[in-house]
Length: 233
Image 1 (cartoon, one colour):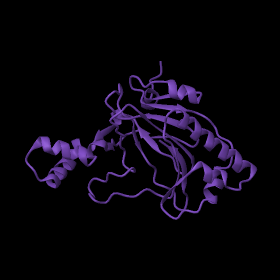
Image 2: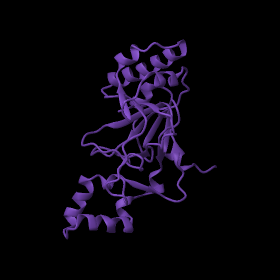
Image 3: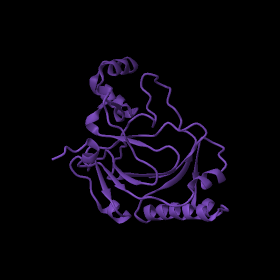
Image 4: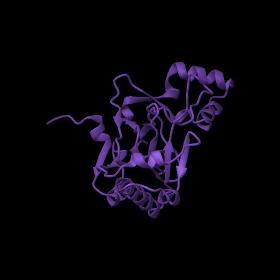
């Protein structure tokens, strides 16, 4: 019997949006993937939008107003249908075109931006959904192949200097308040998994009712001169 890779333990494939919504996380599975191959020209949509900032949200009305070729229209219909499916299932999707995210340089020894492997957290039961249609794509990582950064001795020592208080209980609250506890460092031999173009993903997050570990993920470093088109909620 062949040994399963960490990704095969972590990821479950589904064949429809309904299955993506209905399937629960269990055991080591904290990432669900609606695996599909999309048609249409999503790059045309990206190139029709003028970016005045590093990231812009595109509303359905703006998409419908674009003059597109036949393949551009196919891409737009897919994008709008994904948006509608998520919206009709109680989600709050946003369509984003991204040049790059803001980098965090407040603490050089510990950036807390989305380019670092991290988990999402919510006080209520929910999941993260995302799909990249054009441009660089996000990564996830098996939980066993990473270490929470606040547990790395060198980093913890620097954080204690930053906190500059004696009370350990206060220090733990400080780590949570500034989101340091959400970030992870991949191990040297970690098998990073790229989420690919066109796949709609559901990722487990940290919330009180969760029965699984939250999914470690990060935004990609964008390719020079190339923006990203994605849905996230």
